[in-house]
Image (cartoon, rainbow, N blue to C red; front, side, top):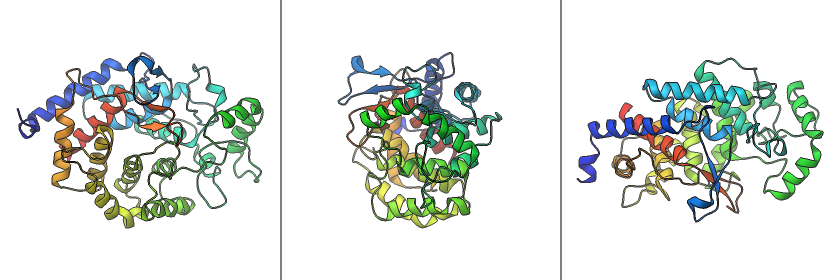
Length: 347
C-alpha cells in the first residue's frame, strides 16, 4: 500500500481512533501522562520517568480538539491532576509535588500559563493569577520565566508572596542556578508566546508581542528560548496566538508559512523529525494554509504510526542550549501527531 492510498479519510479516521485509544491506555491513574528525561542518542533503557504537570498540560491541549468522548474524558482527568498540583494563588512548578526535586525549582510562567489554559478549557475554577503573571515582567515589559525575589518594587502582592516564599528556599535555589543552565532573569521566546496565549492581547502584553515579532524577523527562532530549541516549537506557539485572533502577530504570518514550507523534506516530513512535522502541520493549519507540503506531511505522519497507535519518543524540549538532557515520551509525540491529524480532518 502506498502513502497516498494510506492517507485517505477512512484510514486517517482509523489512525486517529487507534491513537486516542493508545493515549487512553497510557494515562496514569492520577490523570498524568508520563514524560522522560534522557540523553541523546536516545536509549530506552537509560530514560528516566520525570513527573511533571507540563507535558500533561500540552497533551491535554492537543486532545481537546478531538470530539471523541474518550479524548474529552482524558482532558478532564488531566485537568483534575493539574488542579491537584496547583499551589496557592494558581501557581505551578515544573516538577510535581511527588518529585524529589519539587522544592528545588521555582515556580515558572510556562507551567502556570499552560496549566491555567487547560483548567479554563475544562471549566474548572482556579484563582485569578493574571496579575501575578503580569507582575513578573522585565523593565522592557517581557515576561520572566521564573518567579523569584527581585530588587524591583513588587507590582502585585500575589507575585511578591510567591517570590518571598522562594527567598526562604535560597539554598536550594543557589544550587539550582549553579547546577543548571537556568538563570533568575531568563526571558524565553516560546514561554512568552505561551503566556500570551493564556493572557491574550492587551496594552500590557504589547512589548512581549513586539519582542516575538522581532525574533522571527531577525531569524532567531532557535536561540530565543533555552528550553524549546526547535523553530517549530516557536512557530506552533505563535500560530496558536494567530489562530486565537491575536492581531499583533499578523505581520509575521507569511514569514512563518514560508519558512515552514521551505523546511519540507523529500519524504514528506518537515524539519528534523516527526515531532517537528506534527508541530509544522498544526502551525500551517492554524495559519489557514492549504499546500502540497501539508498533505505530504500528513501522509508522513499516517504511515509512521506503530501498531500500538503510538509514534516514537522524541525530544520536545531540553534542559538548556547544551542539550545535555532532552525530555519527551511516546505519549507527547503521539498527542501532537494526533492533533495534527484531527485538525487536518476538521480543516
